[in-house]
Length: 339
Image (cartoon, helix red, strand yellow):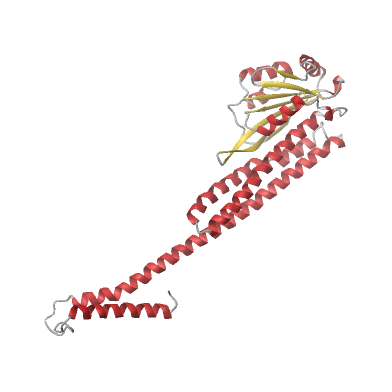
């Protein structure tokens, strides 16, 4: 639990927020007070966007967060991995990553949390609409749904993660829609177009898998933390979130397998078309060969022994011979079922 000095700081900060339950502290920091009428039932949620040095300094002075953790939340930095830390002053510091879809491409959006008794701070680069939508909802509503639940900062944290999980579901639902479009493209004999679509979707799915792979472990660590470990009523939403993480991972695995199968199918069709083209070219080459041979023979400058040379209309006789050779080759290919 938090020390008495830290809790006194939180007590003062809560009182700074007016009873209208919302305060715009700066352009990048907004606060909303959530809970019932009793002070010990209230928490504050600080939503910090594009954190720079002024925002870091505000959080350090007012809440005593660890400076190393605060520096990790700067908008210019991006953590390479998800992080769960239980800090010495009783706070939990969490870094999570979520997929962000922009211009058809998946990129990484980071959100950081500081979680303590009666306080939750979310820090992000304003790339996750689901977080801002939930904050605006809590800003307008009385938030009575959290009343009477001690330690309800865990429930607020779970609600934010639930919204973000649904945001991920929307992205993977879009993947499913793109998979159907790719399937139609492949069997519409548009293999070249399908190659680009397959590669783009494969990259998006791989990026989603990379981004989401650590969520289950982070949630399991939070489930074992003092915030929820000894409170079964607080554990339930996080067990549900772990199931979400498993389900999302399973869907992404299935989509990855499907797109690999579609890629193999498209490559097979491309190879078939290439083979068919090569066969056609080979047939034409073989058909032209006897015509070329006949033309070469009759072009030899021999004075005697060459047939048709002394015959009237000898040119047309040679042409007929060449045509008969071509027809014979076509008949032979048809008989062999090469055409």
